[in-house]
Image: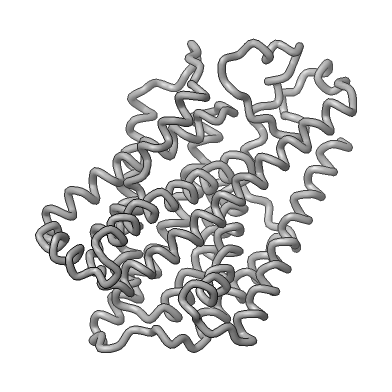
Length: 371
């Protein structure tokens, strides 16, 4: 877990004059000095509540951003949008707004910093993997019914358990497995639930292609989460907000540039003007849909990377799956979808699974503090 790197940041009270906001992780570090262990209990409790506040904020960003981006993406297709590369491009194109965060929380240079060449290579590799993931999801959503698409996307949590165990040494307790099973079941219920907006007229070949690409995208997304956690723990090694922003900004830059190349190389850019003119709700609505879809994905990404940094890639994916049943609730209000018993049960199971994982993390924190 990411909280093994920052145990000494408060030692001696010297952190009060640093230029960068330090994100504190509760619980003792492996290398924690004896003096730090004798800190007042009130100070430890304050750091603990601060950490929970940061985690709750990251979870809020992920849920709100993912829900908004999903609804706007559905709105884009329902109003006449059809570009797969543009859809992939929007998932990362909003990264420039994150530079405002670096302005307020600048990175502090240090002599032991990771070589720029090594970090740049990691960002490029992660960005290219992210590009492949985005375009696979875009193709899958175009060729599959929404119900089938949701069913396959639920498999990302299963992939993430495997990658977290292999790459990140994630501890798999009974409560964690209970959470995984419940959240996956919740998403599966949504997947098999009949929906009135399923796609028709897709050939069997394209249907099979969409199935395979969406399954591949789910596995790739889980791999990205675990690789990001591995990078934070073994390469970045900085418990700072700017580290989170840098990870998201530069990987998103690579993915955006790659999607832009794909947009022009595929020739889809030639159809964008006609797509905007024929957009059912008008040109201004078309532009606002693109802008706010891009912003929403960045909000979700900040929450995702923040949770990987603060807790683990598995926890980030648990929150992501937890948000899936929320989309139908907003679909009822925004698109007047039917809210039936299956969707209500799915939301209740999702909440149960989420609480199960939070309880496990609370027990881990309590054990760490008493050690």
